Length: 359
Image: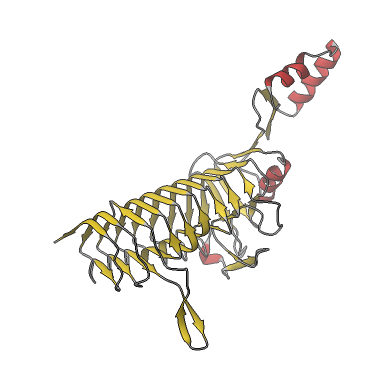
């Protein structure tokens, strides 16, 4: 393990090294640092490097040790995870060396692999400035027995996802792959804001590749979501004022499933070979004593779609299921060889500005 000790400013670091220490004191200080593999940098960051032989508990202990923030770097190798790895302090980063750094969920662990946030212990305000990067998560779904892990403090369910992002702000997920998870690949929820996800891949997950609930002001770009058993992207429960761009969605059950979503921008989506629809847009239904009723305020409205290509889907290219889903402009869309039709609306007017339907 390498520990890099950083002081908050260059001046204080200089005072600590060159201050009124006797020569013997300086020698003792340097010997102490070198004995722990430490090096000093003029920046505010502590980095812990873990070898491939480390356990999931070793990773958690390293993260918890960085109570003031810092980064844990994992070497290439496979790390067996028995319980979730939790980033639950501000200014934490967990980073691998690329897809050869693998977090593998143990048989019958029945839990998320990584959690950004603290769903089991309420904090004063959202946890902020977290980063997860450069690794692969294998949820080992065929050797898990249940989907539900725990119930969070707000009553929401925490399922066996690859990554759960729970009530955090200003977090980033970069160059991460989630596959074979018992529930979803990446799920954000519970008031997450200003999340940035880029170069994210999800495949062969039991449900959605990417699912977002109660998520605002976030950006998702360069997404590669394919062969998930449910939706490539699922959006619900107040997914508002976000951007999704440059996404490849192939061979999912539905490309994009969305309800209760407002003011979002979708740009450069390429949806191919969905088993059912390319985009499914709807208002939420809920059971009542008199039967199923639409829930007020859960319609999709004010969303824009630009340069969307939808082809070879087993259902409809773009289905607007409820007339209440209005003011959703679609521009520069291309539809090709979709089995049940292209743009299909139930009385809604999506404001098609420019679209082409190819023979």
